[in-house]
Length: 224
Ligand SMILES: O=C(CO)[C@@H](O)[C@H](O)COP(=O)(O)O
Ligand SMILES: [Fe+2]
Image (cartoon, rainbow, N blue to C red; front, side, top):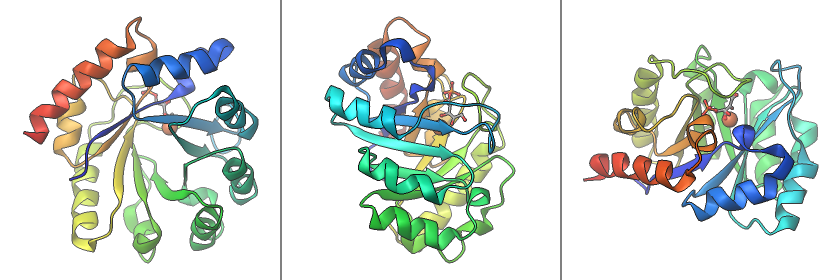
């Protein structure tokens, strides 16, 4: 397996001082910035768009920005995010009329591409597109809000997708998003995830480095 990546979700960051907060979490040892985009249509919440992604790049953020699109329709916003500095763009298959076309659009824009599965979204959407994926994201909560509890059935789904990835031979990250904490990250990694989104667990504490270090210590028990 590839090295584990920790991707703080800036949904739980301080939006009034976002650049500083993103710098702080990266300096604390985070690998990737997870950027949640919600449209108050596909999900019942409204967050941030390409201008904020561009603002983070202008502020000097050089880490990968992992844009999790919870928007419908999805295609028309993809080129804007690519121009604004997104590194990875993931979307929910239910939000796309033509999944293969959306994946191609992301790749042609120069970004890595991924599909996102809600807790009740079936895995058959993976059929016929494994060769076009850089990331598979399993939601371990229903999308729309930070601070929810991890849904335990995600562990079985992770094991299934880990097998699909390994059997396919493709180089695909397996990301998990929702309710990831210090006390469950090892179990989630053991089920096959290698990229961990965590919002409230990191940003709702005063010492980001302490939490990220604790997460890495938990992950080390799996790597060993
Ligand atoms: O995409 C989402 C929610 O829809 C996530 O990225 C959350 O922001 C994760 O927050 P925590 O569950 O880690 O607090
Ligand atoms: Fe997310």
